[in-house]
Length: 455
Image (tube, rainbow, N blue to C red; front, top):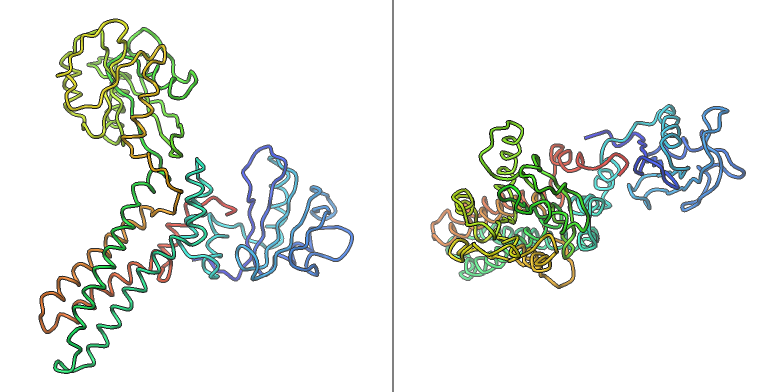
């Protein structure tokens, strides 16, 4: 972990043309640095009260870099709980960079990715779950994703984790207290009471684990792969779902030779649509590579849209591809029904199927509806905080340790309490890493390295 006693700075806004750009400075020297580079009428920044803002000029020596606003935030009432200065200058590629260079020349260090948020955690303003919510909010692609991230940022998910953690600590304390009794004096109802409490804890963890799938979809989006033989309408479907002409559509088979990915939002969930090369036996090495990539995406898909041509009998290659698909994760789209219907029901038995004329848009609404249904996006309640992959892995490990403790207690052996406590302590240590009650440098680096510089 970095030395928290030094002062850091970074540009906090995205590069490019914009109305303003923001440079953030945090640390004990932030106000001193502001005094050196910011010129305006009145008291210097270091003598201004918390919440003050002023208009002036940022200078490097006698050279004016930009006209800007400067905001003063004093510890502990700032994002990092340190003295913080924010300079708002004109947006663009040059101004903010020149101001940052002047700040760094004053002895300030360039912040690493996520270091401002890391300091907020280390200084006790937020926990690790809330820190992760900051990143989720930045990366949110829909209102539903953003609302869930705000719920997490407000501490709702942390409260659930803390409740499980505290319950296990209490159970562990009760068992440790029992060790002070002799075998004859131990409370006879202790083990049944502890067993009941442990069952409740396992149910809490189970309920939290059930939110992972929704969390995965909110954060990562669903991978929906469009595949099929050449010239069946894959690119036409992609364009129809996007509502614009993104992929080239041609009557010539093999037009699409690489994967083409775009994102749409359905029911507040990002859907990553992937158009793929037509599946056939190819001699061209470029087309072969496109088909290999298509098959790779098909294996990873959350949902598969397989298109077949209704005007032709199902051939052996289509039949082979359909056999390789999961009926629970696939939708068969029977396209070109206006040209005839030579596909038989037995050919697509077990699959949800939709008859369509994609060139006219017929069947598109039903396809969208079935995507929502198959991905389980019909949830109509208020968006809520949901666990992430890191939380899931820790909860699963803790669940295993707690179940083992329960099994040991049920055995009734003399040494059962000591062994059960050992497993419960493993669970406590694991759960402590979720919110940051227990942490190490590798854990923090794995979390905050995913942040952008300036946050």
